[in-house]
Length: 301
Ligand SMILES: Nc1ncnc2c1ncn2[C@@H]1O[C@H](COP(=O)(O)OP(=O)(O)OP(=O)(O)O)[C@@H](O)[C@H]1O
Figure 1 (cartoon, rainbow, N blue to C red):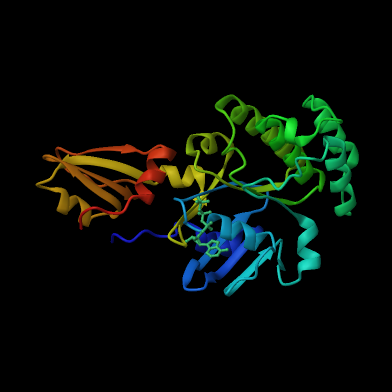
Figure 2 (cartoon, rainbow, N blue to C red):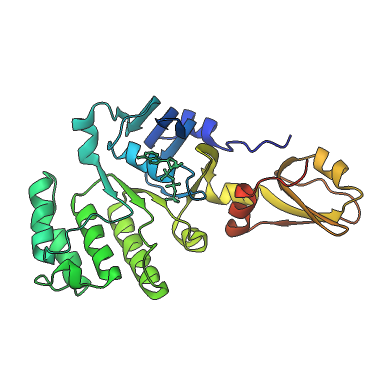
């Protein structure tokens, strides 16, 4: 009753067209399993948030999807093409790694030229229009741009490749709050204009709630939950009541987390409608509280 479940991976896997499909995926580095037994689908056209604590395996998953590493077990498919067939899969993907991987000595123009030379499907007109719209000077070296501007150049290179699946590893992490909001908004405009699928890892859960329609929670190398964001949120409740009756209430539900303070017990449960008795209250969780509950180790059993 208490083990976290993969809410929607099974039905998703059967029904939805997948931009990314991961089956039985595992990745081991020496003795450490960074990912284990992962099954998940990122639906085509979705903006999917990938969340989890440090070391959960988010970057490893993104790098496997970007064909930068080979799985130890299982498989990864991009729009139905296994990433083993790298020549077919690669043109459909763009990956923005955590460190953005830009050359600080290159100017903006040189960076775009680099993008053009490396990518057969490069859209030069789009890339130049995007940097012009953002007011980024073509002759400026990337090392002299602000962090937010550098991120915008890296995003322009990723988008200029005209990918079908954009993989972003914490793209906003090193930006100040204003730059974060601006970069996220311009990214979402580009996403809406192009209709591409995005898988986006971040610790900034509140910002993800604005941008994303699907959620994948990774914890300790495993998929803890995946599904449509509204559906996920409509099925997670915070129940509060007396510690005297908490066992009875817990026994009627799938418990995600359980805590207590003095005489008051709090349960986070997964249920379409919670079944509570007198003296108990139920409220739906917001995304941030839900992610915290999912990632918190259960403190009592
Ligand atoms: N190249 C590597 N060699 C050895 N171990 C690795 C390597 N890459 C990742 N790991 C290990 O795999 C696990 C998952 O790491 P990963 O970077 O995927 O997590 P993450 O969720 O992206 O973390 P963060 O939020 O801190 O970026 C960690 O235990 C990490 O130490």
